Image (tube, rainbow, N blue to C red; front, side, top):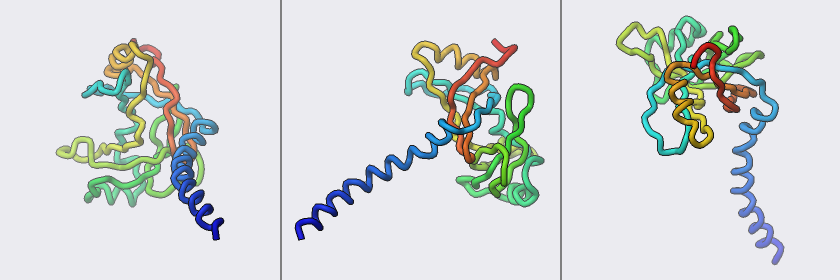
Length: 183
């Protein structure tokens, strides 16, 4: 009889620990064994600097032409997207020194390199709605103390390339570098 309460104590103690540790599995897998890709940024206007030195990033692949959508997704996007958006898989292909969007689909690609994101409303809703925003949660990178202003200025001119490790659609930023030809 004494053994049962002792067992419950350990079970109750381990449940939160196991759940917290399990949250780190996907980022660690992406970081340790993911394929590294380089993504191009576009200018962004930072709003707050309360988190120390960091760079706000707006990736070029976050704005996607509807022509890149699978036919079913294009039809759904042309009508009305729900407010939080819909989960999508964005297949990537190399172009020069970085990667660009190849296809966007609601179905997981059978192979190749892809990122999972959330398709949101059009970038310019009052125009023809051809460009849509996809959120990958890769919009902030913390830098060394004192170097934030330099990176922020480069990012505003689109002069930053972002190194991302990708595994099973999950991306982790591993670094940023200056784009060749931009300074």
